[in-house]
Length: 258
Image (cartoon, rainbow, N blue to C red; front, top):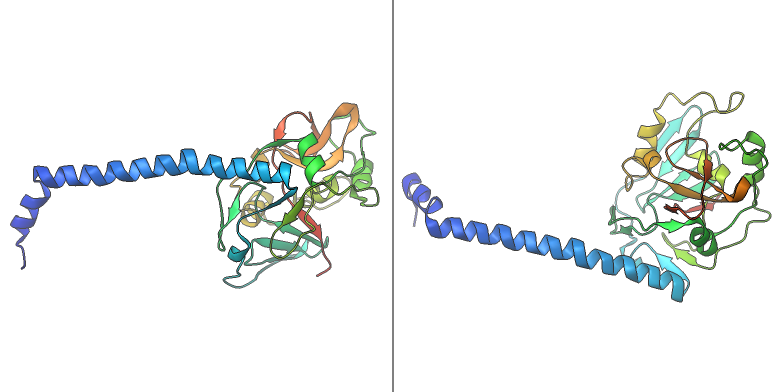
């Protein structure tokens, strides 16, 4: 049976219809509240428990690591080819590095990263995910070119206690300060001078969509600095010294030769 516009309008403004609509909105709000305030904390808690008890972690169910879509190539005159893969990773071909495109704690649903990263202090991050050489001869607060090169060495890198599974790989680790500086996307003329013609912030946000503004968050490197500090980024490049007992987030990298 067809209704006229007048009849439809009477139904819409009727008291029962208004209560029905309010009921739907309230139910939706309750569902969102329960999901965001109870489900996600349990997921985060289970990740921490998994990390500390069985010494392994991941970014969600392995069955969700399917690849949908095509590779995207960014060909930069300064930094070479960057291959964005549909499995949640990208490859920096110039430096031979593969990165997971979101911090630890988020989950990959096969198309994007969801949830929130889990903060750790540097002692926890390096214990579970890897510790590099100490690089801290210049106590200026910002890593020197010499210390940056010292940090690049993997000869004395100690693997973390935890195995990280993602995208069919299990050799993910905490990046060195040198590797972390690779995503500053600055060219080396003298020290750390000229940015690429691409805006570094825009490029980082494209590569790490799980973190809207990567440079406004604190991320750890695997290297200790001078005076009991550790190298990391907290809004500035290159990495700076940060007190290791503060909370920060973890990005994962692996060496590759693609």
